[in-house]
Amino acid sequence: MQFDDKVPIYYQIKKYLYKEIIIEHLNPGDKLPAVRQLAVDLTVNVNTIQRAISELVEEGIIVTQRGKGNFVTTDMEKLFALKRHVVEEQIEVMYNNLTALQVSPDEVLEYLTTYIGQRKEQDNG
Amino acid sequence: MISFNKLTKALFRDKVRVVNTFVSMEVVALLTGVVLAFFSSSKGSSFSAGIFAITFTISFFASVIMFFMLTVRQERVWTRNFYRLIPVSSSKFYLANLGSVFLNYLYFGIAQVLLLLIFNISGLISSFKYLDEIVKTLSEAKFPYQVIFSAILLIFIMVIFIWIFVTLIHLIVESISTFLPTLHEKIYRVILYVLVSFVVLKIAGYISNVSNNLFVEFTTSLDKADVANTAAASMLMASGYFTIAVIFISFINVFLLKKWVETDPRSI
Amino acid sequence: MDNLLVIDQLTYKRNMRVLLSDVSLTIPTGSIIGLLGDNGAGKTTLMRLIAGAATNYQGSIILDGEVDKTTIKGMVSFSEQLSGASNDARMGDLAKFYDSIYPEFSMTNFNLLAKNFDLNLKQKLSQLSKGMRRNFVISITLARRARLYLLDEPFDGIDSMKRKKIIENILTWMPDNASVIVSDHHVSDIANLLDQVIIIKDRTVVNQIAADKIREEYNQSIEEYYESFYKEENDND
Image (tube, rainbow over all chains, first blue to last red; front, side, top):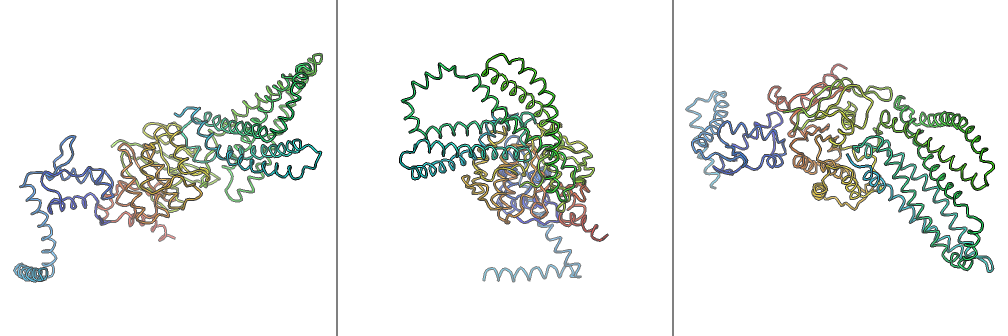
């Protein structure tokens, strides 16, 4: 995995785990790899992984079972909220960029619909 | 902390490679010598005497070279990370290294005896017919066992003495040179080695002079005893004298090692 | 986190030169610390002093409450510990030497590491390329279950694939209660690995800071941050 040198590593690992959960590489109730294994796989420090995971535990996305390890929560509401949160974050970035170009909200929607239509055709063709 | 025996054994093994390589080279030299002796021996002259002369000469020079090689190996140990980072006290480390060098030389010595016996086997067999006579002469002439024993003891202690003496000079030079600039270090060191050797020998000479007077008084009091006993006694005295020197110098060596001698920062 | 290593007002002179001047630092248990600085700034010297290779310094070095040099030597695994080993020795012989001398050396771990690095243990030190020698040194160093690992420029002369392998092995074999100090001048190799960086300049420690703090508060990569310390000097010249 490539990291951005200027962004805290633990934060990038959180994002990475969010993605793994959203795209269902990690399903609800799945066990996470051991902390040291994750550290080796991502070539980062064990403490950094630990920090990312403990923040996910605080957010309720990951549940720690003593002596057994870390598991993705089975609370589907939490997981839906996570997905919505991550998607909204992306949209927020795009929306901010476009409004900075003085594109009106209605136009944004119009551009987006047109773009999606084009992409669908492209990807199918 | 690792035991003294284990450390000595490990340091022995570390040096024994050199001894083994060297002895195998020596065997080649001995074989060549024997072949040369075979071709050059004219009729009538004793072949076995020729072999004895050649093998003994080779073994003698090999022993001198081995002594130097082991001395170099011993001295390297004091300033290299590989050895100095071993978690043991300085005194244990010092004794184990000295012990490992001594044992290696002993091992080399035993190899020499065996090699000389093997290469001179024909001469030995031919002298068996005189065996009765030899035994008879030995028992009649009162074989001077005490002289042989004290001579061997003296040789052993002298050998150890030379090693620790070299160490003393080396460690003093190492300690002093940490206070000198690194510029022209090689020149400094050569001068230091000469200077330190000179001063230490002066001091040793003074001490030995003083004790020599006592020594002479003691031996003259033995005048009336027979020659063999006097010889043995004076060699024993000398051994004791050197033993004290060895112990005294070892204390200085351990002190220098512990307080002043660091590993060489540039050694790779 | 407890402090594993506490260094207080360390000053070291040798050959009429000051090699370290008034160094103080603390290193928490279970952390990986980057020791950054130019060549000759004092990185290797600092490691030598911690490892116990040099003794004539002022100030104190305390490792897990211990001050005795012999005890500390048994707790520190320094990547320079093979310097001065006989070149005619085979790697296997040297591993056996370690096995017989260091109680905390694990032959099993060493063999796994050696296999991972494709080392042929029958080869003599004199036959090794620079890179292979580095891999052997790392294998020996990590096969000791120490409290503190001192890795002096472990990636020098190693290509990037092998660098990753070394990093993976550090992460795999570092015990939970141990810390690692790694010096490097290619900061980017190890940037993701570090909890903290210690910046050493002109023979003293000029800063010690958490790696994520550099990214979070200064919005800089470790490399940029580290270079800013050396740039100031160049600007003043």
